[in-house]
Length: 178
Image (cartoon, rainbow, N blue to C red):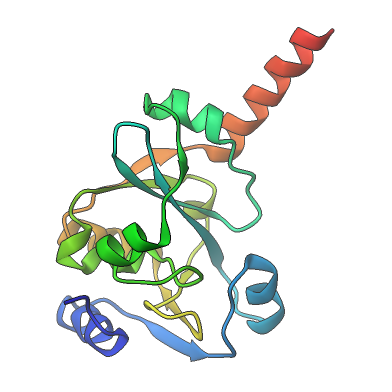
């Protein structure tokens, strides 16, 4: 059974991880979240649940304004043909529904096969904000505690400069067009 949001917050407490949760109306997109969150300072994430052609699953956690170029990311990860994962797979593996994707879902035992890609741009912020398994709340965590959480749940991140990957691919395409 996937964790509930209360169980997740209790797990953070048990790990000694500082957190603060804010309630708001449901947010399904980055734009909705930006309009609802008010003045919460720190890094806000967008989360992409992806599947590769060989059946591998990826959770890409990027700074909310970062453009993620899937082709550039495929090359960086050496992952064959990335596409968005099905809602059924997301629910089965992460225990969340579309609109509620979060790296905090990696605490679910069913998330073991999901590989985590963390945007270096997001990690420049402190604190970091994520949905706590539901999209009508936002939980703030200190950056160092978030990294401790990932270690505790067995999901060390693969760090990627997602903005840099997208920019390099755009520059290569522009040079090719000239």
